[in-house]
Picture: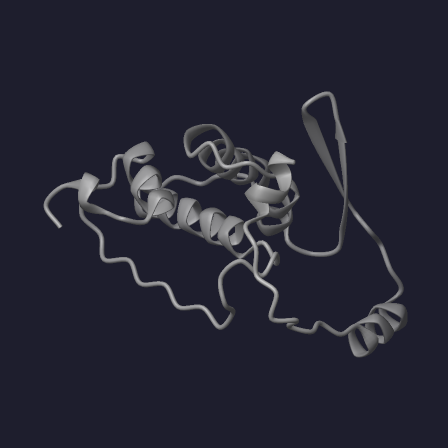
Length: 140
């Protein structure tokens, strides 16, 4: 593409504009259908921001990655939704996320390895076939 405006995917287009990226070949593959509510778009945003920064030789902290993904999705793209998906994607792991006064804090949850293994072996995730836009839910 010759012009950033020709990029149809709004998240990619605005992230490229924000990071002043003009030439890149970006390929994305996913195993999940869209609109499942699993936070894949926010995870994609965090990963793309991290990749663009690495391309420019910049390091971003977990907090900075989360904050920039939130800014990109909520302020620039005007998508409705919470912040938990961006924060979870940026920090990774098993954490407690607290929200207060338009701020967030993240604390790792320390768990016994046996208990963690038990959780991992007993938690299940099922695809119900129901798809929706989380922004539509947030509007109401």
